[in-house]
Image 1: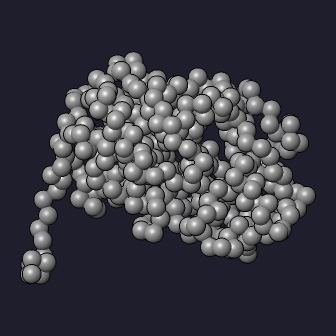
Image 2: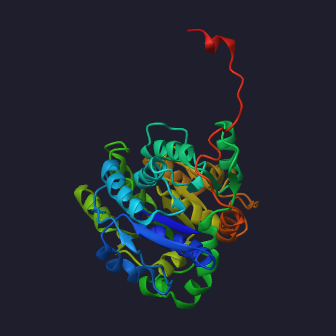
Image 3: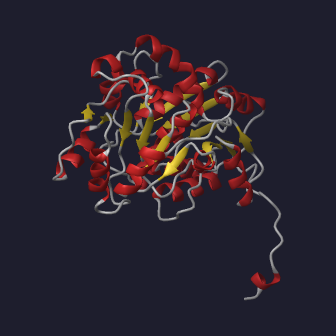
Length: 373
């Protein structure tokens, strides 16, 4: 089977590699990356020695923009699909790119496999919420990271073609944690000790957050009296520098680091402070308490399990959570068993995916009042 897989970001390549290694044993896969091909080589060093697949096609769109244009991605991807005519398009994640990919494939009657299906924060003002809902509706086969995601789809009438695969984040963590233990020396390089520091990763300092969000977060970090390490992208450094509030000496900003170093920092942190969904998932996979700087999350299951606390951007709530938050002893396997990639490949290889095969989802009985014009 000819498969085209759409990749939106550098971090996607990590989980893509886990799936691609399995898929390529039986299928012909082409990776299509939204950004410039040269960008891939500039950052590949951050993911060594993970043996990531190289994208065969790049859409050459600027990745510095906060949100890629739906129209641009749709137009360029349609050309790629017309040229390659795959038997299946795989889309993943919660970005505009995933929605554009699903639209492009649907317009050409190409079957769509949707990874990360059923993720809901139930806040329609979030761009990723709209992307998730619409992409799920267009998909022909849907793979869910959690049983809760399966339930979300069922409540929306989507049952056929839905599979609980588990989360590729767990596959990725379990496969690379031994290498992180062996090769990463990040704790020695920055002078930290396992269990005696906090890891803070802040990325969502944009229009979806209140104007004083970042200032409140910085105040909280400065008020916490224990070491905090903050890996920062160039964009994050600019945003932090624009706030007229210097970081306290115990808050250590560092440049972006490789995946194995990042995994080591996550594993050995006393707790993780973040507003990033993917980091919330990895924190749970590593059984590290997570304090989330948002009022909603796409991984609500971790909150319900007691390992993630939502505190928004309020200084006092952040400080109190860092001081008082203790997760329960129970740590249920929310994200599967670490074999999501094999499960996805097994489903896709069992029988052909037909475009529109699950379009008739569930027979619903409408209330008579709804039929009145």
